[in-house]
Image 1 (spheres, rainbow, N blue to C red):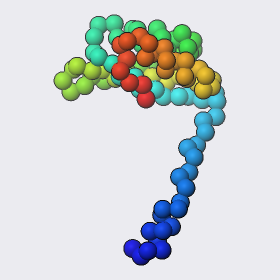
Image 2: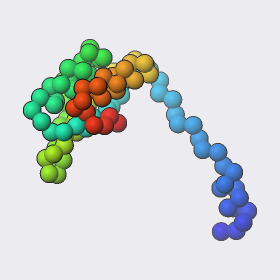
Image 3: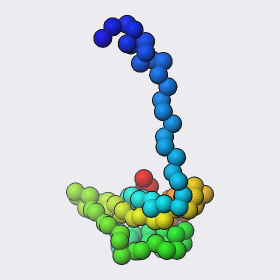
Length: 100
């Protein structure tokens, strides 16, 4: 690689992430400690923010040692405000470690 190509790499600006067009199907991964009632608690919060959410489509995956559980849900997102409120409510349960 020559100096010119290195200089070009340093001056390139990162591209802005694509914007989401609402409404849309929005997949969310929710990770928490595997415990009785975890999935039910998450479903209750998700339904409060996305009333048309289909709880039968939740995919639960336990960690290798069974300590954690991830839940994959898909909602019909209506806007950023809805998503931020949902994420905040999930974290406020005290049972959710991470929302992706």
